[in-house]
Image (cartoon, rainbow, N blue to C red; front, top):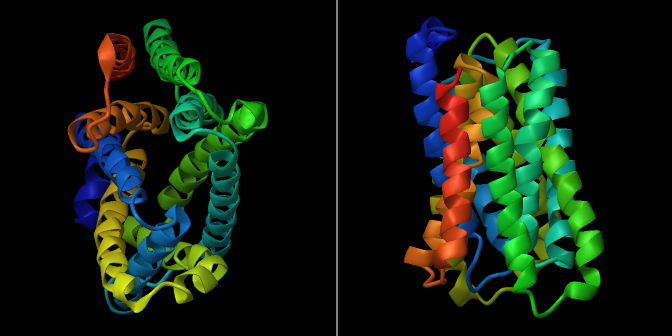
Length: 299
């Protein structure tokens, strides 16, 4: 698998595979968000997921993937630090604002900044038509935020700081996307970077939430554990897919395609959670999808 990934990097076949991986990551990201909703505190659910993917990654890093070369350790440490800041910013965002308002702001901010960063760091270039696609996608995502804000009946008094945190969280999404793409390209084996990342990333949330987990009734632990294992598998597939996509093709294009997760999230809410979509949201989702298609095929 590793040899094949390295062989197709930068080729037309690699571009096709990366597009499939990025769209798959978008769908799985929406599923991952839905898994954090339910009877438990979202941070307790996230702690169960993180602990589960750490336990899954442990035997892989010990017995399967090559050990990280010395120069990769500070890169992994930097990735861990960026993800910690991202998670704290995400928590601050969701504590202050309605999810349906702030989530699109986060996801709309990230691809624009990622493309600019990729242009500087990886010297990726996009033509005018592709830039119009990026702007169309971002406008559709932010349009969803405005639409949901107009429907908001509670929490308006904390909305302004929530939006500020949402923009910062979007910046951190762009930061970890760009940084991790750089990191996985430095690794001799991309799976070494991925599995060591998951092991290190699994430590933070369980450590800060263990008191909440310990206070749960024993009857709730099996369900929480099952949610953690399912979420861990989805997280491996989602994050692994987008990281491999950035390894074998352009970082900016993969980031844009991933943000179609906003469309998938709305569809999951409609089909599974019974939420109403309506014609305006359908139109905005069509804008997002059209922007992604333009970026993908106008290159």
